[in-house]
Length: 221
Length: 223
Image (cartoon, rainbow over all chains, first blue to last red; front, side):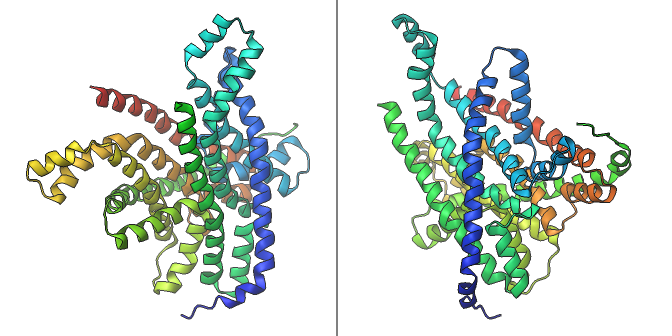
C-alpha cells in the first residue's frame, strides 16, 4: 500500500468550500442556538408550571436522543408535517439549532443557578427594581459563568455538524467521502479531512480551557 | 397540518426495531467496556514522567476529542482494512471506533478524578510498602472510579446516542432499521418518531440516574 498525498492539492478548492459550508452551519447553529437557548432557559426557570414542563421536556428530549435521529426527523418529517417545502439546508440548520438551543439552555440555567441568593438579597437591600436587577446584576454574572460552557458547546456543535453530510449537505465530511469514493483513495483523503477537523477543533478546545482558567480567576477575585 | 397518522406499519415493524435496539445496546455495552478499561489505562499512562509515553497518549486523546465521531467511524470503516489488511465486520469496526472515542473522553474524566486524590494517599502507599501496581489497583482505581462515576456514565450515554452513527456505515442498528422501515413504508413521521422515542426511553432514565449518583457520591465524599 503506497500512500500518495500529492493528489490532494487538486481537491484543495473543493475541500475548502466544504469547510466553509461546515463553518456556515456551525455559525448559524451557534447564533440561533444562543437565542433559542436563552429563551428556553427562561422557560426552565419559570414559575409557570406549564411553561416549565414544556421547556424541560423539550430540553430532555433533544439531549436524550441522537442528533442523527433529530436531523432525519426534521429533514424527512417536518416538511411533511407542516405541508411546506423546505430545502435541505434549511432543515439541517433548523435541526442543528434546535439541538444547539437545548444544550445552550442547560449552560445558561447552570450559570443562573450558580448565582448566590445573597446577590438577590443585596439587590433588595439596595432597592433595585426587578429589571435593573436582572440586567445589571444577574445577567453579567450569568453570562460570564456560562462562557466556558457555551464555548465547549461550540466545539461539540462543530463536531456534530459533520452529521449534515448524512442528509446530503456538501460540508467537509460529505466532500471528503465523495472524493474518497471517486478516486478510491480513502486513506489519504479521509485522513486529510480528519486533520482539517482537528486543526479547527483542537485550538477551539484549547481556547475553551484557557478562557475557563481566566474566568475562574476573575470570578474568584 | 392535515397529516393523517397511520401507525399500522410501525406496529408491524416493531420486532425489527427491537432487533435494531439490541444491536445498538450491544455496541454501547462493548464500547463502554473498552472505554472504561482503556480509558483508565490511558489516564494512568498520562501520569507517567516519560515523554515517549505521554506524548502519543496526549495525541490520541486530543485527536479523538477534537474530531467528529463520524469521521472517526468512517475512517475506521474504510482505512483500517486497507492499512492493516484485515477484514472485520462493520459492527466490529463500529464498536472499535466508538470504544476508542469513549476511551479518550473517559481518560480525561479519570485524569481529573485522579488529580483530586490527595497526595497523602501516595505517601501512605509508599509507607505501607505497596508496589506501583498495587497502589494503582487498590488505592487509585477505587477512588478514581467513584469520583469519575457521574462523568463516566454521562459519557456512556453519550456513546449510546453516538452509536446511531454506525447506521451510516451499514450496521443494522436501531437508526438503520428505522430509516429502512421509513423508506420502505413511506411512513417517515411515525417510524422516525418511534425511533426517537425508543432512544429517549433508554437514555432518559440513565441520565436521571446520573443526577442521583452525583448526589450520592457527593454525600459519600463528604462523610
